[in-house]
Length: 222
Image (cartoon, rainbow, N blue to C red; front, side):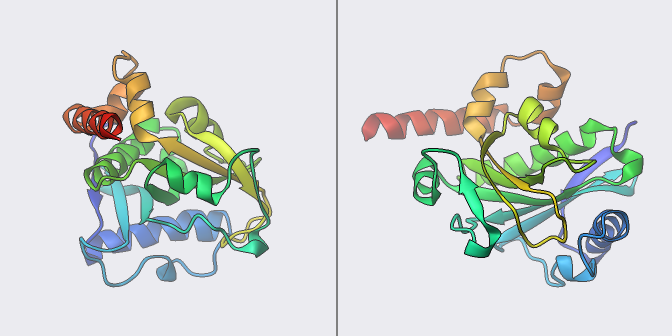
């Protein structure tokens, strides 16, 4: 399958593409929400506390990913959060600057094509590293039929840091909390010949190398 493109959602046409996918996956397939239109704001601009990305295959909407910058790491008490030993909100805050990945979904007809997810992650990585963020944080559902838990942990290198029982989606599965140190991932895969990692990091080497050197210089000064 060819013709995969990913772009930042800023205009009404791309916004409608996002709504169509959300309606197909989260509303009709999963029944996790009551309205697709309320998931993405009507007003979209380059400088906001969130970014939406839309993947297309030969012009057809094929995947969505939302970034939320500087999310609160103190989750509501009613979510019933439990972190792994030695981890709490203060610990996370000391590790770096976080961006939350959410509303990451691919319709059933494209779900076997991992290149779509990798292209979305590549666009997300370029965006957050360019803004001097260092970590991703996200939730995935445990034991849900299409949970990306294995993809996130085995392929991308996300680490499990906790879980919670409730959230903003109407799903009874436990939420697994994952984080990813972006430069740590890059250091691990930059010399890999794997097509998966080449797809993920293509075009980002100069930016990631610069950020890595800058981080090392900052550490040596402290």
